[in-house]
Length: 207
Image (cartoon, rainbow, N blue to C red; front, side):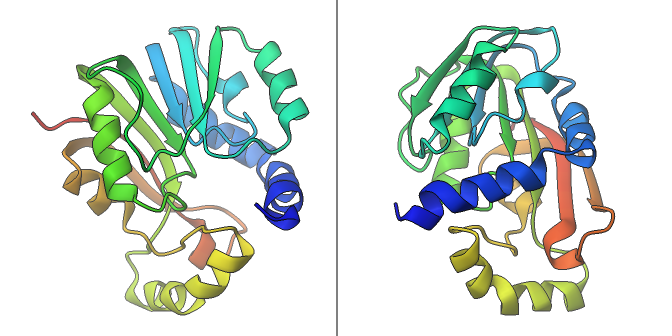
């Protein structure tokens, strides 16, 4: 990774996403997490304070190790035991099938290269009665906004280190073998629609 992607961008995102609005978003997205949890795309650990008491153990994976000292401090302050692994979610996950009660992604599916493969792996390691909790930004259901997202996406991918604006999150999740149980679509307040189109929901295995 270059200096920008290793040092500048993680600090920028940590600053932008550590605020009252996103704290509320995280709490709502994570309130049904329970048991043994796998978080894919851990980032700098901003979800940690928002996991409920029903979470017994947390395994977190991320391909990057940016802001390691900050992340280590947040993990040390976590209520539950946390195991941290540096892994790319596009490959096969090193876990047995049906290992986790809950899978979590927050602002993650936008930047995984092989997102369909990653989602299928998440489904594989989720228990049959488990839940996948997601909070993602993605493609607008307004065709005019979606066209603007398509036009701006090449610039976004460079500036935001591989983040895509225009992925149809709901379709990706369904096509990977999940059944969406609940889905909220909305636009973040005070945010341009091309970046603020949100998907918050719960899915289960479509067995």
